[in-house]
Length: 292
Image 1: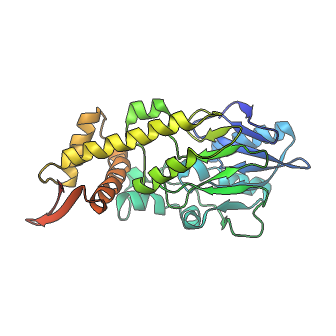
Image 2: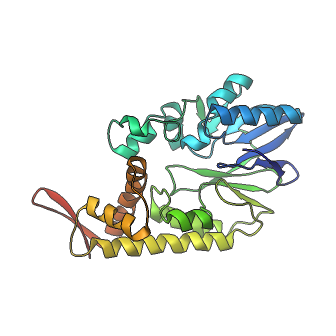
């Protein structure tokens, strides 16, 4: 997190692994969009705010992933400000162990209990709380996570959270985390209809025209869906599908990647099953997925 870049008349963002938005609220106060991944990120944000003479009056969380809320606790301790999050994300902000538990499907092992997946808890309030700044519009962006939102600043700039991966990321990893691919595709098509002077994704370059990158993300989802149908074949287990996916994409399996990519693959398989493209059966006490 290094350079502070102006995005609009009232909007800025801090460039970094997870881009953090800043909206000037008047009288030297600002609203922060997300808070970086950890206490160190929070310190860097505070340093920038201090240099500009700004006081943080609220943190507007797009969703509860650790790289977006990890700095909240530190910043709330420094400024005594509220943090707000979309309804379904609030419990994850308050009980961050839910993120690795979701990925693992049970009590998570130590390999999943680190700052990239397990943030410090923050005292988040829902967006329906009367203290949420009415000048900021929350834009629902479901698919990547439960109730993720983007925010439109008063100057029209839209912060898009994690609804778009960069071409570089898609080229390197191919599979980005999704909880609901069907909802994600709907979100991408909706984003193509939005108008704004500038769009600021959390993990891709800011752009005045976001449609080209949106189309690349749509194409990648359809590509992965087709590949998974092929890998299901006449019937195979989830672990075999995941292994073959890593081989086909040239990815390296680690414990963390197993559960991050694995969770996404399970979400794809659910979508493909519910749309009639694959089937699920039990045979010899094993679950088998097969191309329909």
